[in-house]
Length: 640
Image (cartoon, rainbow, N blue to C red):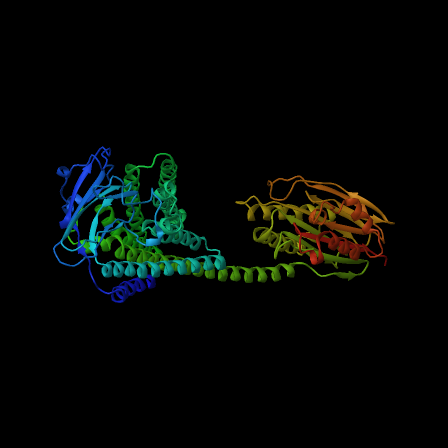
């Protein structure tokens, strides 16, 4: 919006600064002939072929014909009259000016000819100065791949200077504003990495700067005056590049992959059309190609506007300013296209001239302003969504922290009792995990029950299931019905009930669990165990490890599982080690902790410290790079 307000103020100020002097229309002094075959030379030209240059004839539109203009001027005063004839055309492929009796042109130019940048004229300007009481006739041959909608002026030196000064002020200011907007867009993109700002910068560069500078003649006059073939194609090439940039900007500014995924899948059609047109123009550049591309661009702009209105009505706020932005440039482009295609004629020459220049630049400024507001709104919307997402994530992290505290409360502390000592360790790979371990010291029956389990997966689902197993184990091991059960029967009942809990809790999930329960009679030293698919238990006696490998089916697999059961006669000095598979699988490198390495560590003086140190060596301090939950429970039997 700021760009448009600046453009309006600059247009008004430029008229004041340049002097509000108007040139004279040259149409009353012009006659015209259309050479449809384009083969007539100046020597073969016949004055009888010319007809008066009425406005409808000067609006030739997109034509392959050669247009000849004849300018007849007479000076009836006794003084020399300095005049300049200007043919107002934004783009002109080629023009030649002849006077009789010379056979060669006195002035030539256009994008297909080297351009004299020193004279500084954006349009073809012919010096038609007449001496006192004299007359003159000039013939101008016009050839163009673009639209031939001619506005002809007769200037004095003052009016020509004022007009070109006004154009310089307006266009220089426009270029400065758009250049500043381009820099700001790139800066915002580099700061936020929000890709829509990069696409907006591309639109500014290709359309608002590259195309407009070339369309109004500034580039091929000053940057490549000898470009010839390139100069004639530059406007068309930049128009198609602008179309491609607009497609990407349109797609991202309205978030079409999310808002209109079906339409998004069809955007390749205008993209391919532009690519084909670009390749075609390199080999066969013609008026027909330009006309078709301009009409396709008009349809594409109307499509942008229609989609913006549709999304706006559906409640997508950024589409409001986007659709207004496209509408502003559509209105003036439609007027330009209709005028260029000779589908509509405006009687007022100043309005026809303003459509091509001042109003066009003002519409571009309005478009850039509204599109900037649109992507600004989209960015603010994205920022709000990110803030909401951040708050939700913080809330989730707070919940996970609370869940971590609760889960840590499930893990019992170390315990030193009569004839035994228990040490525990629990390291989830995330804030919460699926490992659980526990024990129950039955003082009355003088037995110790150790348990460890590993739920498949990680995170919240695994943690919830491990919590259910924790509750089932402690509830059942303290129930009155287990008092009369011996070790094997007790373990079978516990594992079957826990299997039922896992089956019911994870019925609609793919979660399973492995578990090992060990019952130790503290009087006799008998150790009974039951295994539901868990890792082997290690028994160390006299510094020699024994692997107890009885397996079984995991918990939750079916209602009648087959568990691995057995017993071992323990004695004072034995060390029993239960662990989850994460102890052997976590490592920053292929140097994983192997079972035989683990056994050697268990035979050291302080096995717990040795295991912890080994884990830090493999996974980093505090196990910050663990891939799986890691837990273990160590129990030493002692003599009375």
